[in-house]
Every structure is written in structure tokens, then in C-alpha cells.
Length: 96
Image (cartoon, rainbow, N blue to C red; front, side, top):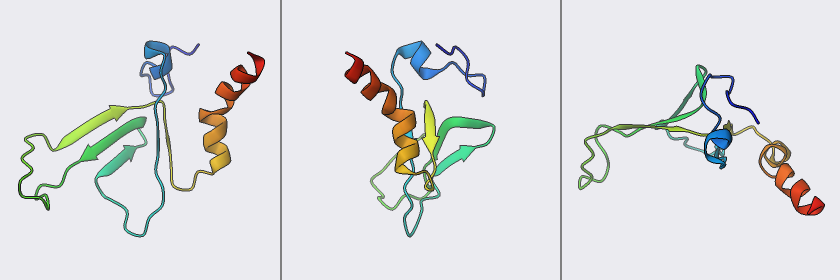
């Protein structure tokens, strides 16, 4: 089992036994609120707009960071996602 990822962070599965992935899907008007940097490829940064559309929203914190097991970009194929996320589980299910 891996203890360190390429970014030097603890692997989520090794630490917690659970893997979490994010998959971005392409859309006509992509949000600018979600950021993934090359220096932290397994970290999803969410930046809330300074002037939210809903004026009832009162967040004192405008940014969040989530460390995940992996992030799939919009050009990722379904096959790529399955091989990374589901293939191992299917293998274990078949082998009992």
C-alpha cells in the first residue's frame, strides 16, 4: 500500500481506507470557482465569488481545499475512470 503520493501528501486510501475522486465534466459555461494546480494535482480548491448571486449567503470563508485520491479532467474517458476507480473492486468481487 502506498504511503506517499507524488505530491508528498498522505495517500487518502492508506490513511483512511477510503478513496474519493472528482470528475469534471465538460459544459458550455464552465465554472471558474474550481481550481486544480499542477503543484497539488490531488487537491481541489473551491473559490466562492466575492459577490454571490444569492444575497442571503453570508460566508466569511471564501475558499476551501479538499484533498482527494485523484481528479479526472473533462477529457478523461469512461474507460480511464473505470480502470482507476472500479476495476479493482470488480476484481475483488469476482475473486470472492
